[in-house]
Amino acid sequence: MKCRKCGSPAIIHIRRHKSSFCKQCFNEYFLKQIEKAISKFSMFDYADSLLLPVSGGKDSVALWHALISLGYTPHALHLQLGISKYSENSLRECRRFAEKFDVPLDVVFLEKESSITIPLIKEKTSIRICGACGTAKRYWYNRYALKNKHDVIVTGHNGDDLASQLFHAVKSWNIPSMLSTYPVREGRGSLVKRAKPLVYLTEKETMVYVLSNQLPVHLEECPLAQGAWSITEKEMLNSMEERQPGFKYRFLTEFYKHAFPKLTNNAKQENVRNAFQECIQCGMPSAKELCSYCRLVETTNRAR
Ligand code: Q46
Ligand code: ZN
Image 1 (cartoon, rainbow, N blue to C red):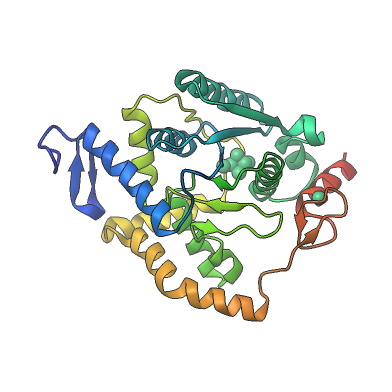
Image 2 (tube, rainbow, N blue to C red; image 1 turned 45 degrees about the horizontal axis):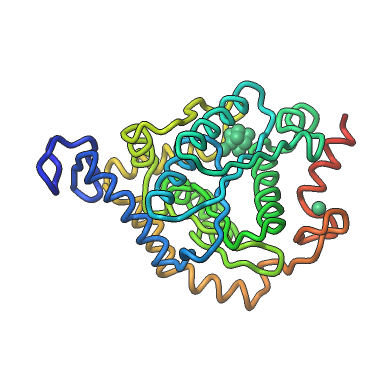
């Protein structure tokens, strides 16, 4: 297998592009896909202050390295979830990355801030744990970005993540969920703008990027992940991709092109997307009197 561009030995074959790349040409391809997404969706520019949540996993690490390579100076934030060894190892790899590239990294400890952890929520309540974990992450990223005046929260969701979320939402025609797969969400009031620059890249590609560049990375699977719906959705989409290379990419990009603009207009007219008010407890944006994070903390504490 030879690189399509320079003829050197290839390290990856990308079926949807009918292309193989060597390490150097793959790096160029990877950065170009990110630049394409940033520009296509007007995600941010060099004047913006970027907050980059990092878990230490392959996607956030790949994005961290890629943004630095493209000349951005993202401010990395790690949220400590308290999932015993798994969380400790995640933080260790984030710190190794920050040291290796001499870049800033802040850490927010969930337990210190709210006296809860993700395992405690799982133990004490019947709330779906990955849903609760997502609520905590979104809450702290937004709160931190607001406090530190960051313009955009840049997350490491890749194209496979977004395609599986879209597929899941389409199965029940959940329009707000379908709309939330769009790779950029403009800021509104105290909701900070969000962007997903890995939209044109796959899990396999972020993994190869991380390994070929020998980046510090945490590859252990979260012990609480078992049974997450996204695993099933990803397997189903991968079997479609096997039969029709490029299926996942088209599924996403055709949605963005044809359905997203119409559904957004309808959503605005019908007020499907809730107006936000301030949470009476923490002051963060909320669809109800009490925001979903404060409700989560309250429910967990009540069950102790
Ligand atoms: S960390 Fe949290 Fe993931 Fe673990 S509990 Fe689920 S959402 S699986 S990215
Ligand atoms: Zn609140």
